Amino acid sequence: MAINDTDTSDSSNIDVDTEANAPEPLNNPQPLLTSLEDNKEVNSITETEKSVITIEPEEEEAGAQPQPAPNVDLSEVAPIPQPIPTTEDNSASFDTDAVTTSVEGTETTAPTSIQSEPVVTQQPKPEPPVTTTAEITYDQFVILGAEVLPGTSTRLAWSPNVAITGLALPTPVLVINGAQDGPTLCLSAAVHGDELNGIEIVRRVMYNIDPSRLHGKVIGVPIVNLQGFQRGSRYLPDRRDLNRFFPGDKNGSLASRIAASFFTEVISHCDMLVDLHTGSAGRTNMPQIRADMSNEAVRMLTEGFDKMVVVHSPGNPGMLRSAANAVGITSVTMEVGESLRVQEDSIKAGVTGVYSLMEKQGMFARRFVWGSPSPVYYKSYWLRTETGGILFSRADLGDTVYAGQVLGHVTDPITNETTQIIAPVKGRIIGMAVNQVVMPGFAAYHIGEIATEDTIVDPETTIDSPMHLGESNNNSAIDTEENFIINN
Ligand SMILES: [Zn+2]
Image: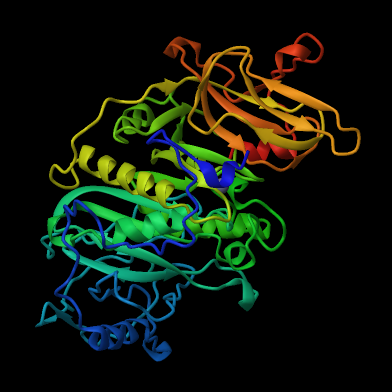
């Protein structure tokens, strides 16, 4: 059964191969937020960006004022971003000339008389930037060495502080500071470099937000693991999984240093975080939120994702969302689709989920007709294959299945032996392997079971097919490489 290409009828299902369908980011059927059509001054924007990234070492002095970032239309084609270097105390200096930006055809000169204390973003222990001044009438928002003025959007760059130049490629950080006060939402994607759907979700969300109508701030990082992305790999160049090293250690391993830099310079600014992922190792996930439902703030956050299903998952140590939650940044993982693919239905579901969250958080005016909330899967299981061979599925992603139902089979191409995979419980297939060669024990189906909240124990355990129950039904969290991966 060609799972890859034949999905599906359920509207919440995914996996439509859309590589032939070019994404149309601005073709939103219900654009609540007007795109920044008026701000087309590409040349002046480019000049402005150049002026911001100009560093004049002779002017270095402690406590230099962050330069206001240029107001740019994020949907415009942009040059490769360059980070603003930071010193140990992050008091980098900048060209102190006033930055002139062109906003909707009007020349405006950025303020240069704002006084503030040096912004600290290089602390090992993440803290939001602190400014104290009586002279500014708005909350100064400084990130990555630049101030983003209210009602503007800009494109900054983050580069991990690693010594080898080739590993220090800057990755864009898109920032929108709304004209009105509100919370700060962060969207991170491609912490695993081969997970592409989230990259496009961040792009579409960010490029369709009008700063003048936004309450709060949105920080979008489309590609956190740029090194992995360039190689089509989940991992960092040293084969480490970046999503096991947060919040990181600036004196630790390469992965730990990269994690620390990202956590401190970007994530520490967030009130809320949605970390975007896909299935891994040939598995695909129905669009879903993974969240630690024992955390009340997280549980409330999950109510904002409209019809997207929620799967209870406390998370592993070192995961970005775990580390963020540990410091009070309310965080969830959004899983959409499959790695190494760009899947239009998954992307649309993700964009809708983020916009609905923003509305729920009061970040912009009503947009949605809310559907009936999907159930929370407080219990979920990975059903593993008992034999090796070629996996053929009968069931589809999103299917509701019943105990005893045949979900698929594994055929040994050498002996021609076929082994059925049978659902041990009633539930919904929230993730599954695509048809492929599997080894015995491969986690093939992720089944969410409707359960009450008081049963949230031992989530994402694995269970054997019923025919093998009683032999080795080890449901404890096995710390294998694969278990680590499937828990994302
Ligand atoms: Zn991932």
